[in-house]
Length: 132
Figure 1: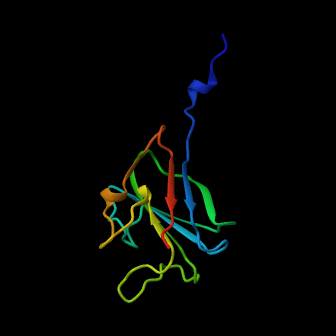
Figure 2 (figure 1 turned 90 degrees about the horizontal axis):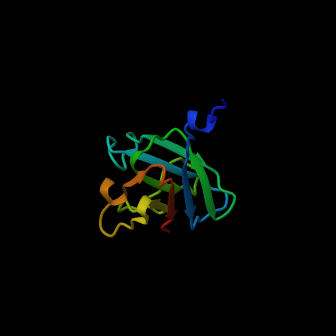
């Protein structure tokens, strides 16, 4: 009797990320993933950091190595190529940036809860519009 091999192996999904409103078609985009045990927006306590080079004003990528769970994403486009987000004298980013849930900060930086989302078999795409 033949076996159904598709039931023997569970398909592995990737976390899809879509970032729009990029300011440059070739400046690198950094995507930081934070889990519930990470200090959100810390430059030293990200779960994972990805770097991508766009080919237009929209970036679509698949992130691997992230198990299902609760996460938050912070991203920025490094216009001057120095590997860090540029800010003004008040600490406000001058490079384009964005967060999961398209959270737009008003007075202070967002919290993990402001940007958190569930990643599972039914929720596997995060869309972010850069703030510039």
